[in-house]
Image (tube, rainbow, N blue to C red; front, side):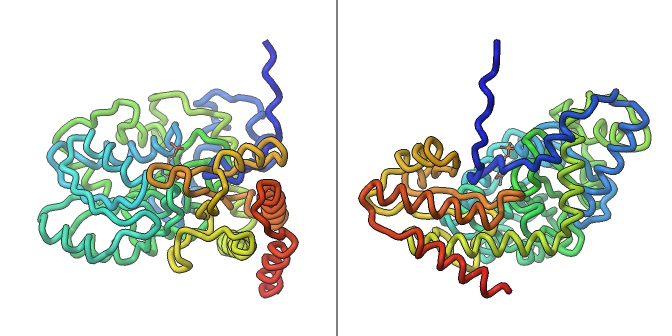
Length: 391
Ligand SMILES: *Cc1c(COP(=O)(O)O)cnc(C)c1O
């Protein structure tokens, strides 16, 4: 059987993001044995590059074999024991997923809810931590991909230190797109995923554990429920001993290595500035088309922009024309945002001026076809002003 050749769709949705040709080339290199000395060197270098991107010196820093959700599961299943109390901030789908996974670990989960499109309020977290002494873990989503909201981390860490809880951060849509700064912010456990701001194909979940988290892990009384994600096996495989546990996804690690090298060549500061610039230009242009962002300027992510679908415009009609006539993918809304919101990713290699302009032009043309009068020339000129200010 012949596979249909994948069309070159421009991925401007909530992930995967566009994969750089250098990464695709790395993926197709010769497959080595997973204990081959050359491959072991690649594993070590990949961990070094991950430490650079996470901005940490944590020894235990490696990619979990699996997508971002496997990173979430690896964090929770190793840290939480049955009966442990965990407070989790929920302001979208991924906070909800964290609650689900934590409760499957047998933890007593206390949810702190926030409105979709905003961050979780530190005051509410504080009240909850005071009402429930002996909380072991405080979990938040740094970049909530279902709403486009950024969670400020400093107040969360401050509360966790005061109440002697560990801080768990989902950095799937922030790592490589905005500062995560694991050591400077004193975050205990942080995981991410390949296919958002890191720009690799889906398949690996970078993760890092700090000393406090490792101490909690070592003092476990019960066995980790998951054999595959048990940190004691994974650290023996990724550490000096090279104890065989499972076969690392060799070629996927080549791809991650290449993606991280591209980030290092660009520089973190430059990369964060690029994400901010193109998302600002996009928002400026979208407003001219009558499309308003969901999240206020203060909390809006540079990597994912959620926008309200204009009135009298049908969600699926626009997205299918974008895909069919313009070869562009954007995302629809989830949960309460279904049919009301589009999610536009400006992640990794996708965050570029030509993509901002291509999307504004395509949306402008489709809106006019559907009888919603607007001018994409004006939208491009408004976006252009943002680029002018930069120079
Ligand atoms: C995408 C995403 C995940 C899940 O990652 P998968 O690779 O789809 O398993 C978790 N958290 C956030 C914030 C995400 O955006």
